[in-house]
Image (cartoon, rainbow, N blue to C red):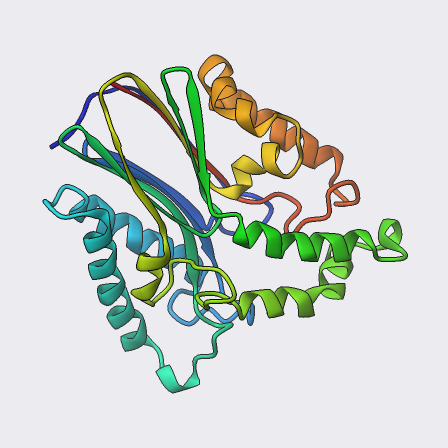
Length: 283
């Protein structure tokens, strides 16, 4: 059963990479943001463009076809992992796939069930909800903390201002690899990939809809304006989306990245990351 969405606004823009590996979806039964990541070995094994693009597009299609079913988000996601794992490994030789090769994705997803909103998050996508006067921010910070190790290493490079973006990234690649090898491990972070166990490790909950709710769902390429660049206080991000619109926030984000195109002020993995967001006004 669906609930009433009074208004909806979405954006999903490519960053500085060749392909957009984000995707968003909105239906009368739910909504989601997916932020894909291709394997670090840069092997595109199932798609000539980007395995991560293939991965998030597969999930987007699957969710459009299944989000309306009388099942919980967890049940839908676990069945999806079983299906995509079977399809992926039918296209590649499993014995030759390394942990760094496989695509994965962060996700923020909600599903409407009667007067309940279910939510599930993996990776570093976020969910902001304003219920009455109270704003709630739901996000797994584990991956953010691992990313910060890399950012700190970048900032401490002796000749940072004289290096190109590629030189900066190459200098810290071993740390990036070490972090990626921690995906879906007890001492690392949990993300959407090919392991059903990750769904049980996801952030999951339910909200009863008995009053007006504003919802913001975002990839880290959008939420970084508040939790990385500090251009907007994280607690105010949803209010800014309500009052100014997510397009205004996005423009402010891109303006900052263009001013810091050498990635000196804010060292990062991409000059411009893919940026995606959904704003929903729910009754």
